[in-house]
Image (cartoon, rainbow, N blue to C red; front, side, top):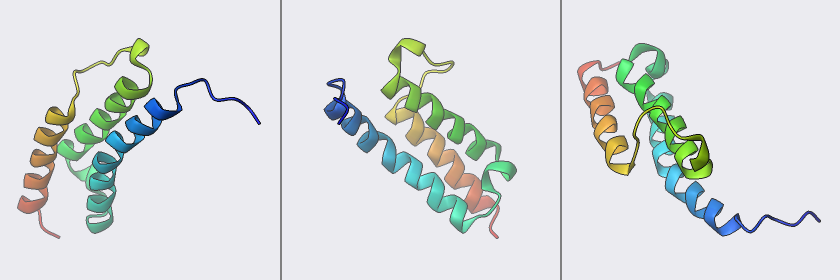
Length: 88
């Protein structure tokens, strides 16, 4: 068995931090096929998730844009507004 590098608990915490944000997008995509392609807000949210993942798992790489739980929440509100304004 390969030994873990001691980051297991930290990585598990990071996964738990990221998961609800990712699940929001997955659920919205399931309800609104093509969401990321159609909505600039959703597309930006998806990239924010990628940047957030980098900030959680590879801080040394830095991110192109500042991202946090608060910023993700603000962007998600824009996505939700877009969905509400463009019902299927």
